[in-house]
Image (cartoon, rainbow over all chains, first blue to last red):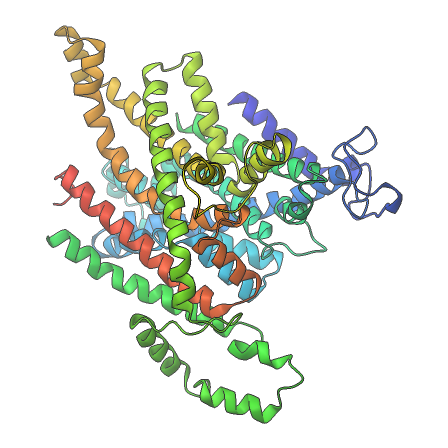
Length: 255
Length: 312
């Protein structure tokens, strides 16, 4: 947990201070040093235009992490709204919302997203919204379960007896006590958002040039696998470390 | 079976919703469904108008949707934009390769994930448990396509032990397995990891249950405790997760097949995505939704059969 937290802090700091850390501009061409293997001058090597892969990975990380964080915010917002409504109102609202959630969960979302991204050709903000829009179901389930189990607790009954309104009970008592579980789901959603974005970009329908993300760097790397393997190695390793740290943190918080 | 009928009835509106979304998405294509002809200088405006009428694109949207849906249900899936052949045939000819890959991956994921989960739980907090859990955590964090690229880099480009991509449908035995090995491993890995994590958590919970301590107090040995008391209780919830999750092998196969140029329906989907072959994409979206929804249905029914409390 602690180690994963340190990794996350390092990754976040690196993404935030990318302009200071990057030894080169991310799109600076250096035609004299094209396709250079990793060295002290270019830690992650250079690509076919002589761009420094380390600098590109730093800036690409900002895009990947931002999409992960913001799409998880969208997903958590939707999920908490649906889950709280279902859990608090109960009855047929609950049945309808949760059957709907199950239904949406059973749609192959990656494929739907790929077709949506290919037809809509979204900008980065639009990508955040569509990735978030298909990631709310897990949070909704967790929130609903927590709200339902807390609804019968004595402090909720007491608050109601003391004259607290629905919104106050929901926000101050139910969601406040469910926040641990909701946070775990949200952390997982960040990792999932990063993975989904990388898959979309890897197939050429996500982040488009001149912007770059870790996934779109891998898209470019695929054609040069035999000659410049470092192009595929490093951006992918960045994804694994980031998502792995997020998984470890949520696992630890869960236990 | 009441449950199966109810679930089937619930699946219908869901599939209608997916078809509606798929149809709506097509309307957002710049230039609409006849986009390919717009950039062709040999096609005159009056030809476009005739084409629009011939294809029924001048009719109201809902009429187009209904006739598309009716045709789809009848098995008339239109013609591929990229080579003009019936979409149904293009998908059908790719199915055997996908079924081979899915079957191998499912078997591999079960063979690796279930024992790994049991060993990790029984040796809870040991070095062995930590290493299994670390591999499993990596399995759920690695992008499938990147794992594929790294395996290709190591075993095909580096050592030269395995072919980097493709399928040997006509050869027998070893050659065929050599082509299958990497894609099946990649597709299985994330699922094996997820299932072992779930099983481990479920087992650890059951191992702490009072009835296990009671069995121990009665002098039941560790092996009998595990096989007769713990596993039956821990496996039931895992079985339904496995079934629900196995449905996700279908979209997972799209990514894996494309990385390894495995000539299945998944590769067809990515090819169609690259060529903006919308008739194929729409049909694939519908077929995979039907596949996933039926898998879920099967999971629900089997779960109810394994654990009768669910049905009520």
